[in-house]
Image (cartoon, rainbow, N blue to C red; front, side, top):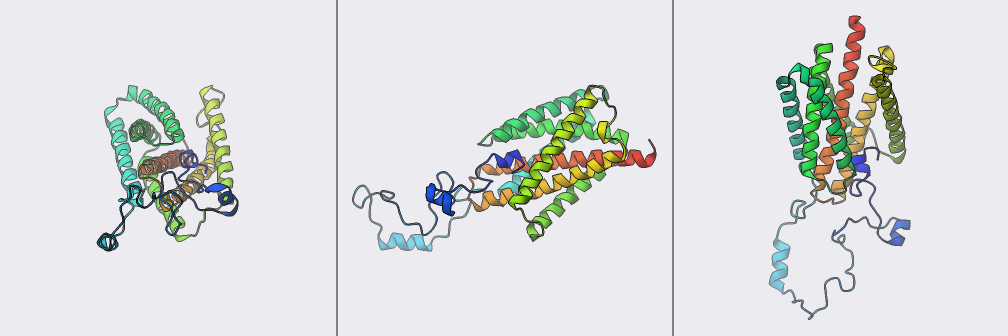
Length: 300
């Protein structure tokens, strides 16, 4: 998977096979501490020996067990779509609050400093969270706060350069998210190994291009948007938005694998974090693209 939040997690990727034979012939996929699938014969010693500390189950106990409602994913402490939606919504709300506070409360002379601090802090915490096997809600919330400061700062800067781009970028992000979800749910876009490999190569290439461009601008070799000036910048921006949209589809597929594979409930934090990373990337790319377009058509 190209999103490191999901690619480095066993529960969101291709299920692991159990046993050497399973690895060769498509055995049963399991997760740590997960109960055997229904219909799997009990293993020797799994339930102990009758009479060795185990009490027989009488007919009344069996009837009570039969009449009781089936266990839900909440009862079994497994991740659900509702968990992911609630946590993603909470992180987005926190991001918006911090971004709005940065926009309104931080004075102009301090805005660039706050934006850089948010960018660096978000990058460091983003890498830490992406490489952690067990998600940390505290670190994910801290990442959201730093990214909120960065998003609020860069949004205010872009709005001063091109009036009206922030509302347009927000609407564009919502529309792209909805379109990606529709394409995934309807099956019009299917996540295949070929699709994943192609997207991984494309995103890696774009990341290298962005780093080189950033370095050239920082060291004064190029000015303005660097290699993203003019209509070339528009083409690069459209490609970046397309890659972010396809990354959303890949994220949806990873979350689906996690839910259907019985991922632990705590992994909903990792799923929400992964979606947040992609949504922030998508918003920034739309913001930059719209700013370049407005500068071209206004003649600035």
